[in-house]
Image 1: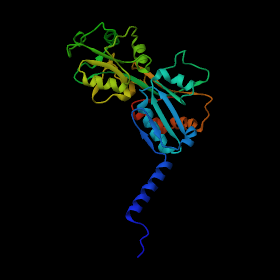
Image 2: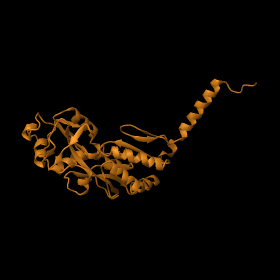
Image 3: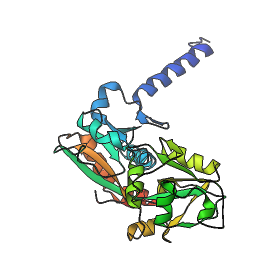
Image 4: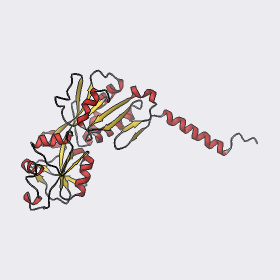
Length: 288
C-alpha cells in the first residue's frame, strides 16, 4: 500500500487550513476597552465603525454591537473609552466615526456638521455599600455630603455611622456632569476621583462608608442604589420622569459621513430588536 501522507504531514496541513480560515472569517473579540474584529485591513475602512467617548455607555454599546455583528457579519464595531469630554472633538477631527456622550453637548463642542441621536435615557444611581442601611437621601443630603458640609453618616440617620467617603468621576465625565447639575452641587469635594464607573462601583462595594454615583445599568448586587426624595432609581420612574437624575445616552456623528456601515448601524438602533435590548439593560429607548 502506498502512503501518501504521514501523520505529521496531515497535522501540518490541518494547521495550515485553520490558519487560512482565521484570515478570512470576521470574528469579534472583546476586552475592557474595545470591541473589534479580524476583518482584513483592506476592508476595514468601509466595514468598521469606530466609536469613542463615554465609559458609562460601554456596557450597552458592547451588547448592541455584539448583536449588530450577529445580524450583519460584514460589518464590525470598535469602541474605545475616552470619556464624554473627548467624544465630539474626536468625531470632528475624524479620529472616530461616532462619539458616545452621556450628557448633552456644550457650546464649545457643538458644530454645524455634528448630529446627535439619543439612543437611550439613563438614570444616574447614587450608590452605597450593602452594609449601609440608609435607603433614602434627600437632594439637600446629597448637596451637603458632596460639598462636605456633612461628614458622618450619623448626621443623617441613626441607622448607620462612620466618616463619609465621597467617590466621584473626573471633570468632563458625563456622569459627574449629570449628577452635579441634577443635584445643583456648586462646590463638590471628593475624597476619591476615579476614571470609570466600574472603578466607583468596586470602591463603594469594598468601603462600608463610601458613596458614589454610576449608571443605573451598572448597578449590581454588590452595592445598592438609594432613593432620592423617596423616589427609587428604576426604569419606571425614569420613563415617567419622576426620578431626579435622568440623562441621555447620545451618539454624535458627522452629517457628511455617508458610509453604509453608519446607515445600517442607526437603522439597527431604530429596530424593535435593539430597543428590546436597551430595555433589558434598565434603560429607556431613545427617539433616534
